[in-house]
Length: 316
Image (cartoon, rainbow, N blue to C red; front, side):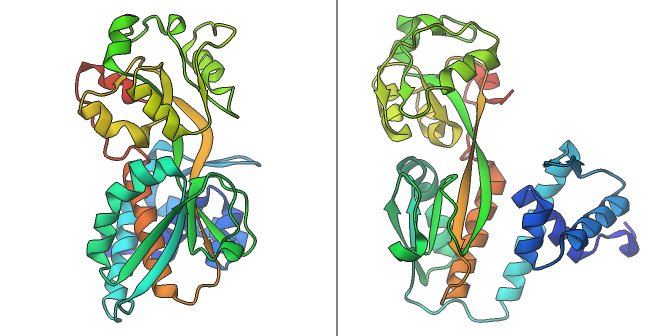
């Protein structure tokens, strides 16, 4: 490609910010630009590439298939540029600490397994985790960040969508054998674990699968994804579990998908940080790292289909 055809860095930054926030106005606030300037830079980028990166209407901005493919490469390039720039300056001083609030399931199944990668990149930064299940006041609680499923908005914070929550119907092998559960099997006949406060999940899943939803719902109700996961492992019923939770259990044979149909729950896993931090370098290093992890696996946590039921991992 001739150098004159290489997109401008400002265009790539505007594109990445718009894709991350799914909004030109939020990208503009993030970049301290006008909304018109961000939109113009993205359109210029599309003209250089000769493809549409976003599908636009008055209310929403969504990535096109070409935009999703391009985002992965752009995110890596921008991350490499940031790393190269940071290499010119000292790392954060040893002894820096960050306090991050995370929901229990995300902490145990997504963030903690990945943290060793951050520790290798930034050995001088200690990340302390606390678990929370609801909205958090970062300033009042003295926290540097939260990673949760759409926590309540906090004044004076920046918000980054890491990935969407994808749910898959999972069961223990013993339950699969007991109820003859297989793709398009007898899901309606088996106990289905319910998540307190989200009674719409199973009806939405049955509608997505094109099946009649049995009423009333049959199965125990628990108040967290972590408890649903434990109950599914114990064979108590089928659970709609986030894809970031299930990789190791599927690979070890402790859980199996029972249908090829998945469900986007409408919730997003979001990073929130205060706009003003005393140790900007440490907080910025964590933000860039966790954002890249979310973009790399889109919440799938490295999941690879282990057998012929691999179609169960596609989200329809």
